[in-house]
Picture 1 (cartoon, rainbow, N blue to C red):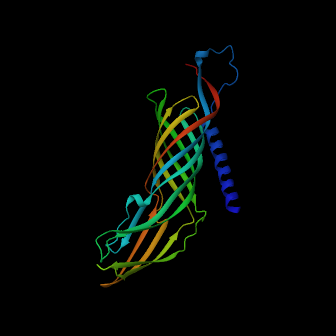
Picture 2: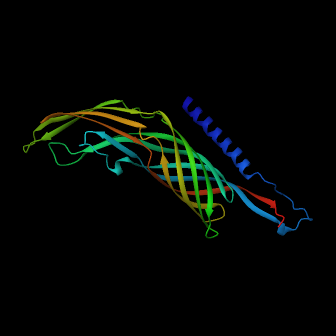
Length: 280
């Protein structure tokens, strides 16, 4: 219950911060509810503000790096990829957007190599799923049509591991070679130590396109460049080969310094019209 309570408090704090920031950004002389009959309507400029809720599907590509013995290289991109669900809630004006929410991201470390006794690739990846609480600000910089708009933004996120599926830090992997008659022989053994951070901060830059389907519904597709340390997870390995005899040492590390693409549908609510006096 303590981690859930802590998560709830963090989300409430972020939402409060978003609300205060949105009030500050939008602060300006306004006229609401009624229009003074002495002011000409052509001297009033109106804008619309609203809140929104957006469930989304995310495709994430993790990053990996391998150092040490040159036989070992980064694993295939498909092994570091994850598809997950998330949700966003935010405040939107005609030009600015501020949001927070929840996502699940995967950080892993792994490697691949061609063993001495075979011609195929062996791959191994260990990963951890983190809960992410982002805070993002976007600015609308282009609106070519009434229904289509482009926004660019930056963000900061807090990521933490709820440790739902604890992983033993140490592990051993054995490799066998097979003769033509099917007899197996122990060819190598790899001893590994997997270390990961329990929490970390990350950043992002993003570009998104909005298309208005109906008054309350928008389709949003967004591309992100995620930024973090590349050593969120570290995989230290020692491989002992029996034929021919050798010792191979290498380290694999991983972070979220890669790309993220998400697709969602926003539901807008709480519309408010704002009026600003113009002396032109």
